[in-house]
Length: 421
Ligand SMILES: [Zn+2]
Ligand SMILES: [Zn+2]
Image 1 (tube, rainbow, N blue to C red):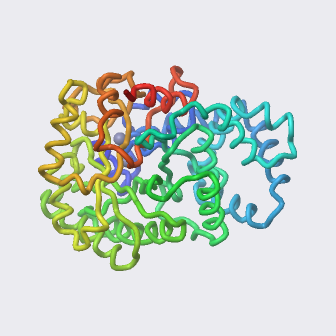
Image 2: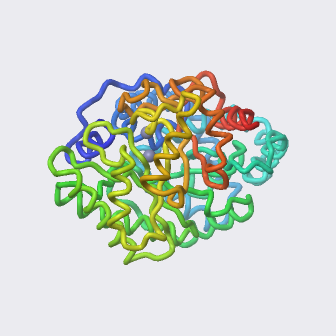
């Protein structure tokens, strides 16, 4: 596939251009969006977006950046800003500018009215008025993949702003092997912001960089992936996080599936031996190309080889599952899928859900996310998802593309909660 084949290929040689994505037009989240196939595919279009938006927005966003820098007088924040901007260099500009664009729309008023207020307070108060109506007593913890532009702690603030009760994020650049070490101050700021805004670690699901392929037949990618997993779990530990989502991997057509599964498990065992306290969560894939993890048997195959079963889990991506043949648009589709999951993998391993509709039809094997209710799964499919007790008390994270139908993720979160019966 594209996703894993794509990812594998991207890791070894520059991505051969897949058709430029036509779905990322306006918003930021696309660029930080862990839609596996989207990552390589979106490169060209992302660049276009960057330059376009840079021209239009760079002035405003620079002003804004400066303003907020003035506001934050402590060394702490400065360290963080530096940290992330260096960290996510190649991609940052794209989503930074897009983020600014989106945030400008939403935040213009409070920022202008009272420039002395701390940015975080502004956002939280906005959230209080905007999202108070949402049922906090729901057993569903819906959220979205949020940007770390400006510092990891900003992701937490953004999650609160959109009314999320859970969130996903990258912990560093998702497209480069190297990144700056995580500063203790940045980690502390992240932890305290989570505390302050009420996000428990069990509802936060970091996503691995796209390059990681623990099952790669290429020795360099294989070794770098193992090292990266250790480094990432260390980051989680520093940040007080307990879950870490990975795409299992890809054999890129050069290795038997069984061997690939063993290598992936081995990489996880190795990371477990180096870092304690973090559970690795395997994301089900769409069966595209040479990715593994699209079939539940493959997830089980990895888990079988993981020694510490208390630190391995699964995140079910609705788009990937649908593309892999589970017809979630049918009345009993979700039940059947979960029964199968329960039988093959085991419900106790279910740690999270990625909420994405699918551009492709059932069984298409394509990893193409669509906005909730606008793809082939459809609203009725998501109504089942939102009323499924087996998804209670676990993070449910949107990774849908920017769309003219929704202002931002908060609209999709609202839509999802409205489906709860
Ligand atoms: Zn993913
Ligand atoms: Zn995806």
